[in-house]
Structures are given as C-alpha cells and as structure tokens.
Image (cartoon, rainbow, N blue to C red; front, side, top):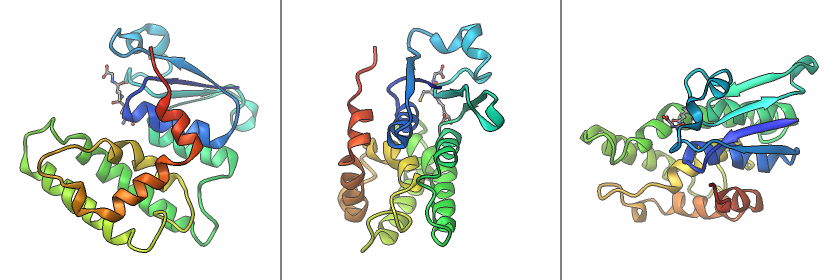
Length: 195
Ligand SMILES: N[C@@H](CCC(=O)N[C@@H](CS)C(=O)NCC(=O)O)C(=O)O
C-alpha cells in the first residue's frame, strides 16, 4: 500500500501527479502545512526536514517498507517501481539529463522568482526557459516520450508569473505545458481541492 502525504503546493502536486500517472492504488493523507501538520512528531519520523510531500510504501524493495521524501525522489521511486516514465533504454539518458536539469536548476530558480530579489534569479529563469524552448522546438516532450522529465518541472513552470519572465517569448514551452495539462492524471491531480 502506498500512502502519499501532501498538500496542494507545487511540490505536493508534483508527487500527486506522479502517483496518479502510475495508476497504483494509493491513499492521500492531507498534511495542512498552514496548520503545521508537517511539524508533528509523527510526521517528523517520516521526514526529518518537516516538509511535504512524503511517501510511505508498505511493500517496498524486498517486501519491506520504504519511506521517501523530496518530490523528485518520489517521482524516481514510483517510476522505478512501476517501470514507467523512465524512457526506453535508448531514451533513458535523455530522461536522466532533463530530469536533473529541472531538479537542479529550474525548481530552485523558478521557485525563487518573486521571493529572492536578485536579478540572477530572473536572468537564470529566462536562460533556462530559453534552453527549454529551443529544445522543445518540433518536439512533444523533453525526451522521446512523456516521462518524469516532463512531470518534474510541470507544476513549477506552470506557476511562473513574473514581470521579467514573459511566457510569450517561449511558445514551445507554453505548448508543452498545455500538452502536459491535458493528461487525465494531471487534470485529476491539479484539480484536487485540499482542506
Ligand atoms: N525540495 C522539496 C521541497 C519541499 C517543500 O519545500 N515543501 C513545502 C511545501 S511546497 C513545505 O512543506 N513547507 C512547509 C514548511 O516549510 O513548514 C521537495 O521537492 O519535496
């Protein structure tokens, strides 16, 4: 049994999209971060960093329970568990490099827009958007097929609103966002009401 601990934030919905995409049964436990549910001793045993999301798999590797935190780690774990969204062997390097590009660049930089008043943040966001836009020209997904390399950045890029980052400059990224948003699992996860 999979138990996902989440709230309706970009990081929480990333893990929720992945859980929905995998199609395995899971229980969603709402952790209201405004109320401080992430700071209880019970939750701290799952994630010492006291943040959502987290995942507990009672049937992890070797039939033993596995506990995960960090939304990107949850994406990799569920992809490996189900053997889905990691690309064919030939495409797997593309899934890896774009997943890491997003995890180590995009999530921090675009997540800092409007929160860190440093031109390096919007300049970095534009440089990353530009790289994504050029790569996505004539392509549907970051790798050959839809994969975690699309799931990992989606909620973060979808939420970008900043006067120095003009989405009209990145039409291939905008069309990619629309393609991801049209997937039934993504619609289900994004429309979920928390609280
Ligand atoms: N890198 C982490 C970030 C987790 C994170 O920042 N979660 C936020 C919500 S999006 C949280 O739990 N905030 C509550 C708090 O800081 O007390 C991930 O991707 O899972």
